[in-house]
Image 1 (cartoon, one colour):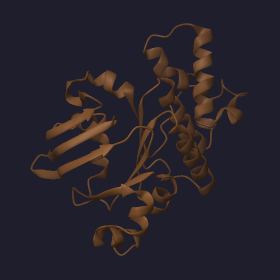
Image 2 (cartoon, rainbow, N blue to C red):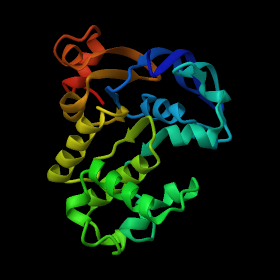
Image 3 (cartoon, rainbow, N blue to C red):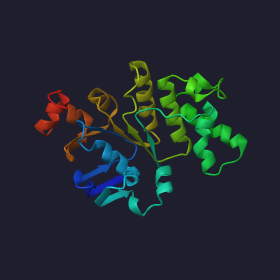
Length: 248
């Protein structure tokens, strides 16, 4: 079974068409890297998967986006965003302690048992590869963490509500190489349990972590294939040109 099945998807914002006739699948327990230059439609594609585009009043779409066998437009949006978590380009910790940042979403979904909450927070921080760095300072402000630690905290906060899919929108754009490597390592380990879609402007990152890669250009899906194939023998000259840095 595929995780997402997308058929004949078109998206507009007012009169501007952002995505054009997208047909593709996202597979379970893969990292799908999504690459392309600015205004290629890759972030619109990502935000479509958990209906973040719905927040824009000028948004409209046609076509079909199925999460397994369910039409995402028919799923309660809060339930959908619990199933499909999102990590943004800039880490956005809440003005709370490290512990309460991770616990926030779990509390919102009704868990009150303190012991179970502590277990879930520890588990999420371990999955986000942050536990060893913060286990003795859980009551400190999240703002005392470094940028890379804040991003892994946001990953842990997403994991705490037990999603099925994690969407990453340029999660390393503001991070140093060491922090980037830690986030990438976390993604690779997390795919054992989750499906991951990664939008990145860093083609080297896409090559490092992606099982498959999709290349978008001017709102069109130019090609999607195994990452090794896309980076060594792409089907389209435009893909090759983008990867080689000839444009974008």
